[in-house]
Structure formats: structure tokens, C-alpha cells
Amino acid sequence: MAVGRVIRFDGMRGYGFIAPEQGGEDVFLHVNDLLIPEATVRSGLTVEFEVEDGDRGLKASSVRLAETQSPSVQAVVPGLRTPAPSVGTAGESSSAEGQETMCDVLGSAEYTREVTELLLTSVPELTGQQILAMRKHLVLFGKRHGWVED
Image (cartoon, rainbow, N blue to C red; front, side, top):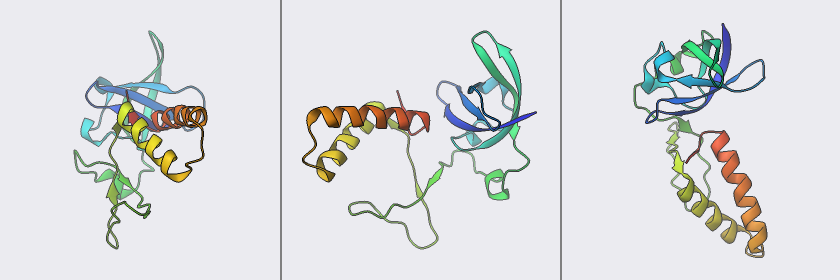
């Protein structure tokens, strides 16, 4: 049994990827190989799984919650989104004491617009070329972490 973290899962398409704890290439995850409710699968979830050779590379099977999972994660309510830490910057809604804000996965276009606005507002002296380069890398970073969908 291998252990890893879900790095991305698209419930609409029914697939995603797991980063193995021991390193190596990401492992493909398909909804048909889950032994847990699909609604509980989200980025950051630690899972145990078998690794198989699939048609296009490594594939996970018999995917279940890792035994090392904290009790609060094991009691995930189906459909509940992953809590994100409150940043508390101006213009953002801050959470009340003891509450966490929720994080939505953004589409690539929406994420790109928000990043562009943030860069323009934060550092107005950036050139267009600098903004394009930074934006490209930030979108790739967001996709790797499951914050941005195509």
C-alpha cells in the first residue's frame, strides 16, 4: 500500500492525481477506483492506494483514507469544501474567531484576471512583460496545487 496526497481531483470529470509520499511521478486517480465517497476527495487529502501500471502510466486503485488521517478529516461532510487559512488582507472578508474561510477552485481565466489585478495594484511599476511572465508561473503553480482548473 502506498501513501500520498491528492494534489488535484475534478469531480465533474471523475479523475485527478496523487503525489506519492515517497516521491516519484504523480499517480492517476479515477473515480471508479475509490473505496471512499467521491464527495470526500479533495486536494490535500492523505490517502492509501495500490499502484498499477495503466495504459498511460501509473494508476491508483483501492483508494481509501490513510490511517494516519486526523479524525476531523475522516469525518468530512460530503460536499464540504476544503477550508483555507484566513489571509486577513484589506478587501478580503476575514473570518470570525475560530472559523475558517472556504476556498473555491477558480477557472483559469478568472484566476488570471485576479492575479493581474493583484499585480497591478501591488506593484504598479511592473512592465507588461513582467506581469505576463509572473502570471504564467502563478497559474501553473495554482494548477499544480488544485486551485485552478482549465
